[in-house]
Image (cartoon, rainbow, N blue to C red):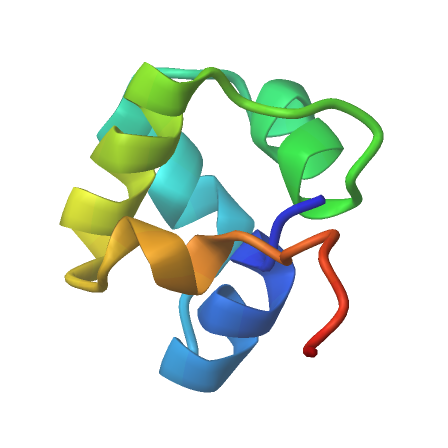
Length: 66
């Protein structure tokens, strides 16, 4: 799962803006934001670059803290 929605909300960025920056459709980006589909690692890196954050901040770990 990813945290794209949370990061967009934190930064006050709209999905349509991100879609334009990525050269993707709004529907594609909305799928990522709603976790209905997952971006490729390459695209996830591009999203992180556009949002000026570390790619690790876009990922929700599936491991429990030990």
